[in-house]
Image (tube, rainbow, N blue to C red; front, side, top):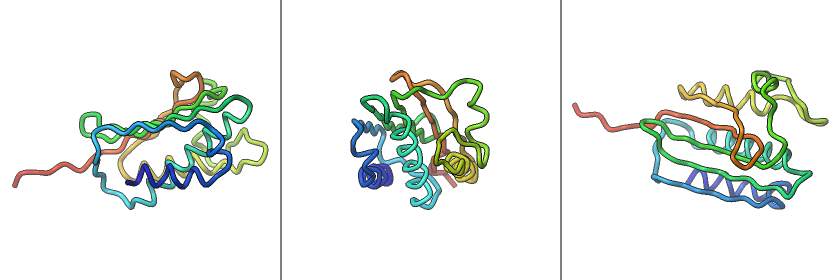
Length: 145
C-alpha cells in the first residue's frame, strides 16, 4: 500500500507523469517498523530525482519492491546519465547538489530517515543505464516466545 500510494503521489507531478513508470512488487505484503509517511516521502523523493535525471531522454523509471532475506528492498532505477563513481559518496551529503535549482537536501533526508530504521541507502548503476538507488530496511518477523 505504501509503495502504491507513493507512486500515485509521484504521478501527481508532471515530471513523473511524463515518464514511463514501471512498478514491480514481489512478496507483498512486507511489514517494516516505520511510519508509512516516512517511507512514502523517501520513495517519492527517489521518483522525483529519477524523473529529473531523465528529462533529456525518453524517461524510464523502474520501481521494485521485494523481500531479500530479512530485509525489504526498494529500488528506483532510471535510464538517465547515472551518477558517476566520483560523485556517489557526495550525493547523500546535506546541501550537495548538481541540479541548478536543487537544495541538496533530498537524498540527505532519505539517508537519514532510512538509517533511523536501521536501514541503508546505496547508489549504483541500473541495468537501464542510469542510476540505481536502493533502500534496504529490516522487516518485522514474528518471534516465538
